[in-house]
Image (cartoon, rainbow, N blue to C red; front, side, top):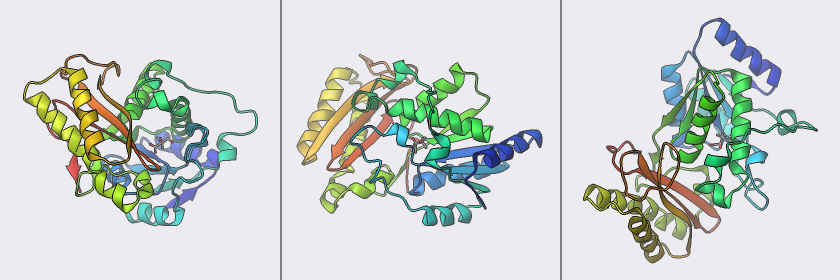
Length: 289
Ligand code: PAF
């Protein structure tokens, strides 16, 4: 595995793959790998000739007072894990190279970015779309792979790529869960034992709502209230950021749950802000590890 820090060098690698007609997949990450990241890398290995994994804790997607400084990091372990999966290039750029003095070009999708997580994190998605656009320009991949736990992020990136005619396929992969249903996330490391014990209730609630929908109860406001109450009653010390049924085509709130709708939630448990989502009609895609 080659460790690359230099922007020009990674761009040469991307360019060479295009010239050689080799399929290159990019797995963009912020590091501190868990099984969710590894599943994206495995998929990339199986579906491309060459794989670049990028590790960059992007300061532009953290707002003031958020967890940029505390965000868990373990580059040595990440490198070992990526190497064990046969990743070809481990790209670790420096913040000063990506955002040099005078950097002033941003990619923003104001419609999609102001909903759900964007309500409490107003600059977050502008930072995400800008860095993802830069990583796509730097690596020129045929495919870029993202986890569907961050469903809003996935839909925003897919829209950016369509709107800007970017020559890349955006692949979304199912959420990987702990044995008790908690969606894997680097931020789970912030949970204390009591919080960790109650965190699976987030997913149990989503399953409950899907069961309601499949049983014919489709009034979205009532379903959202039911889930909020379930969390308030069952997760001590939780603070609900949002509970929302939206359509995957436009992230607009639905009034009656229908095909294409998913339920998205964000719940703060101590220092951790945990997000999760579930398709309300589709067959179960999520798998437990
Ligand atoms: O999902 C993440 O880890 C990040 O938002 C991403 C896509 C790597 C951009 O920094």
